Image 1 (tube, rainbow, N blue to C red):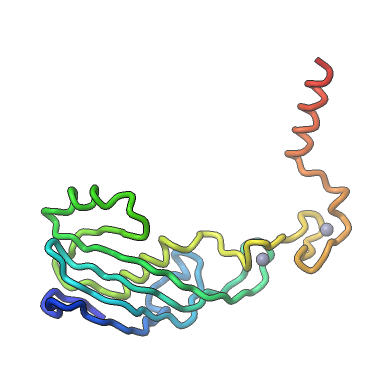
Image 2 (cartoon, rainbow, N blue to C red):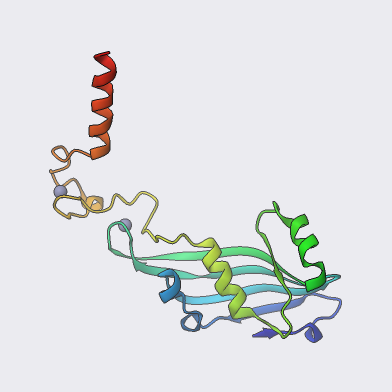
Length: 176
Ligand SMILES: [Zn+2]
Ligand SMILES: [Zn+2]
């Protein structure tokens, strides 16, 4: 969907759109595999441009960056994005810095492409390394076992080099 100023009156325009995720190119750019994706929200005109606000919902799936297992989880991003006329952009953008969830862009010459807005918001909101869950334990560095499924047994023997350095430092302090 393309949003043009001429489509907007005094009332916000209600939008409910399915976004074809394959068109967004997020796989190559952000390593994200997105299932169905939709946007629900509004586009409205304000004195200095156009505001698009709403919620993107869908699902993300892919191999976990830590344990490499496939996962599937809900995606939900609420945002407000202001497209401000060029001449006002700098001062408006400055005034808006620090407001959470609000982001500002220059109003393009032509219409605003909703899919492009959604794409940008997903990139802003989603971490670069996708993991199956915040508690994912990953793979054992020695045997490659998935530690989410249980201890593999080699954990006690493997010494993290960072601990080694710390131990050394401790014994140095003791010996002083
Ligand atoms: Zn994982
Ligand atoms: Zn192991």
